[in-house]
Image (cartoon, rainbow, N blue to C red):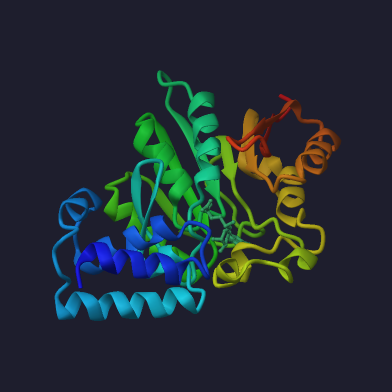
Length: 278
Ligand SMILES: C[S@@+](CC[C@H](N)C(=O)[O-])C[C@H]1O[C@@H](n2cnc3c(N)ncnc32)[C@H](O)[C@@H]1O
């Protein structure tokens, strides 16, 4: 069977589990054949080898069972950089690129600064900042052993010069204070956890659940800002799209200034930032 025919069959099967079956079919074919997508487009009339067909069938079975495409492929792009992903680590989301944009904007290119990426998972946010701003010294903090394994792989893969610490942010005591803290913490409420999509349920609960009201991490980091941030330092959080007011209120109550809410490309509130009063 040609790649073109195979693709049609895949699209039809994937449409039962995916909102973007054509995109996923292409990704799986590229993975199974070991070709990049441009080369694959030129090989539409070629036949798959037996080994490639077997690999494709295995991937399709996993995908139909609800395993996320990114875990099957094992690598995903974020901020135009490659990141290894698999069971135990959150897949970096395109929506989070806004947080990187805003952190880069807040960093001056002339002065050396320090940035902490708390709850760093795969390392996507901190690595993207470090790769785009050589003057910043980045420390990534992640508690999960499984996620930390991916974090270290991603630091090597991207040849990024930064420090990774395996620690619980509720207990971690940094050796110095940061100019900027970025954090995309677990922020889904316990109740919302019950109604997640099948694919998201395959991602680790510890990466998703932010306690009873989803605000556990924001509350702790904001109320303990002096553990992490220099006077006048800036904190930037990714949030769930309904959480902007709650997080802004936490900042207000802790006397932060310049509280700002930024929207993502879909028009949803996505980042809340503020500065510590000096
Ligand atoms: C929503 S994920 C974000 C991952 C990554 N920053 C990103 O944007 O793709 C939250 C991460 O926080 C980690 N985490 C959960 N509790 C933690 C804690 N107490 N201390 C440090 N990391 C924690 C989880 O393991 C997970 O990797």
